[in-house]
Length: 309
Image (cartoon, one colour):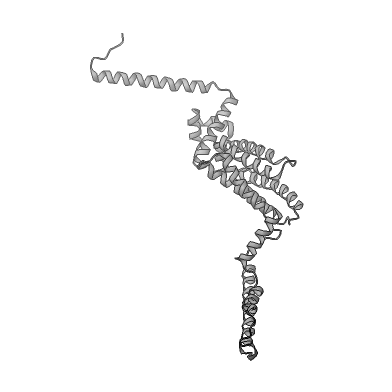
């Protein structure tokens, strides 16, 4: 016969006991359900749990104990499938690497389309991956262990940069531009896109198509206005030497003009019969002999590129 509570205090105790027993049964049922997983299902479960934990905390902060506790299994199960968290991390990274590599290479591997379309397609492909697989991207972009496999995020970016380099080399040759800087331009484009994507992943204030448009606008207009022999106009040793050369040339020109002006003032035959149209010829000559400064060089370059466009 079941004993019924006969006081408010005992009634509360009874309700708590029933609730605890009910909660315990739910946990046991959940564990029983997971315990009936096949080996493949268990492995996939651990991979999903590992990816989520590595994405949110990073490799170093995650322990085998936490992985096992989240999966409601014992630690030996994790070791049985992956040999430890390093093995699980390697599997997670390998899957994400293959997914992202396939996405980007398919965007880059169509030589028949316009180069700008390749830039647009690649930027949008990366942003789509970041949007749809946020955890996977966080795993790749976060800190990685010192035992990270050779197929790392940095190595992936290197492979993509090589593919971009091939595309740029073909474009540069058609445009009669030097290919010496192509490897660096490729790294710039990949780095700009990836780091912008990382920033956007934490601050998605614009949609992916708008962000892709920002990236392409900067990248494409920069590429379309490249100089065959780029140089610094204001900073650096060459720029400073050129500035000193211009200053000396200007000083010499001013000195020569001043000497001619003194000769005119001391010539008695130049009294009041000076031709009005000849006034200011000294300053005009000075202006004509003054070498162009950096600002003039920038303006000239912009005008030339606009005419070429």
